[in-house]
Amino acid sequence: MEPIIFIPGLNCTADLFRDQISQLGAGHEVRVADHTQDESIPDIAARLLRETQEERFCVVGLSMGGYVALEAYAQDPRRIARLALLDTSARADTPEAAENRLNLIGMAEQGRFDEVCAILWGKLVAEDRQDDVELRRRVDAMAREIGPETFIRQQRAIMARSDHRAMLPGIEIPTIVLVGSEDQLTPPYLAQEIAEAIEWASLGIIPNCGHLSTMERPEAVTRALEAWLAT
Image (cartoon, rainbow, N blue to C red; front, side):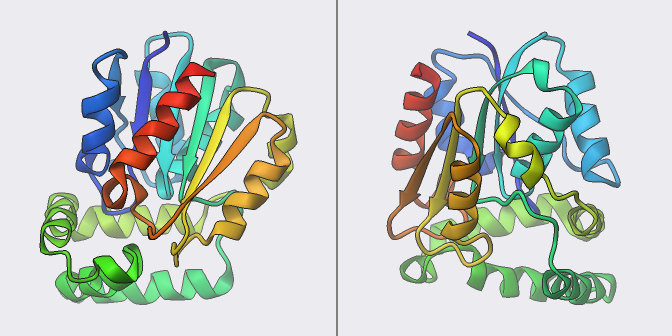
């Protein structure tokens, strides 16, 4: 079986996939891609391809990680054996989203990164998880590890990403598309758009779940990924 490369989202670390790595790592080699050093999504994807020695591998990307996964496929489709796209989009940024990102970048540059994280928290998880102290602790810990400089770099990379919708019909590998039913940042219609465009894709909508599906509903995500790997 090919190794599984997990690609975290914006402001996230390997802890985003803690439960999936623990479960899937028992039967597969798993690694986490570096999405912190480069200035653009193409450069992050190129680093992933360069640093992965195996000829073929599986990729699991959430949010920003999904943008990187699609870009890696665009750069070298023969190397991607399976594709998992979680809480993400194939579209380029909208002007409204870019404006919101610039506002958050400005706050981070002013030393208000804690405020940025507080704003994001309200959009990251489902309504009934807003008061989940342990989940908030883990999300805040990831943000502290990423830090404002890397956050700014990641936001600028996301703003400049490509629209990959035209590429989707040509993807002919086992693909799973998952999304939380209450995802505010990449709503279910964006996941449905991807799944409908890829003939080999399956779509899963996880109930009572926001944007951080791997942390909010880890068991459901892990079961879906196990089925995807067995396809």
